[in-house]
Length: 229
Image (cartoon, rainbow, N blue to C red; front, side):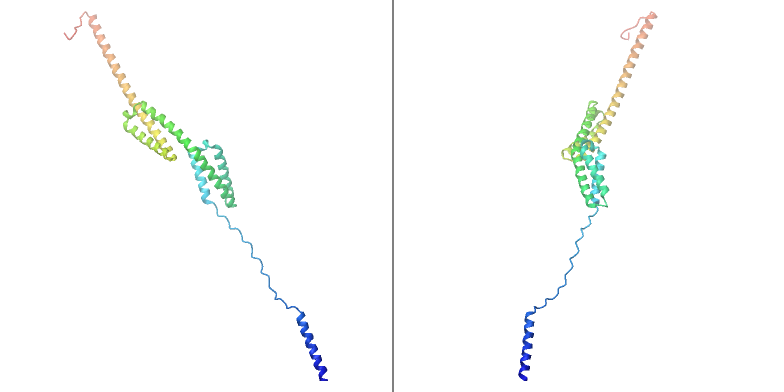
């Protein structure tokens, strides 16, 4: 009885081992990590500096009348500025792009127009200088002429140095000074001419008075004495 029991126990044990060997080990369950949320694009800052620069350039062009020298560039840049102003605050990236284009366009207007403007002002200044020279203003109103010429010379130096903005200002000032010098010289000339006319009139009157006196003596039968005799 004991032997069959032992055999049964061994058989059961062998069956248990066989079942364990045929069953694959269980893999641990790994929890899935949820994907990280997509990074949100950084919000573009308002292009305040670009807006201020574009407006400043446009104000200078308008004040100096430079648009006439590069009309197409000016119109395009003005449209870009308007677009940037409209996009500002709602789509700052687009606004910055528009304003950058406006700045480039306005700078092109200044680059093209400033030399032409300076040349035009210089030509007018030199015409005023010639008028003053023709009236000998350098002699008649020496101090005024010297002031005008000093400012004019400074404008020439600024132009040669590429400082067109200050050159335009000094040429404009010099033109006014030359015109004032020419006007003052003309006034002095007019005074001198009137004085000469008065002298000639007085001389004519004196000659007429002498002739009338001579005729009176003749009419009275009194002979005129010559040489104070």
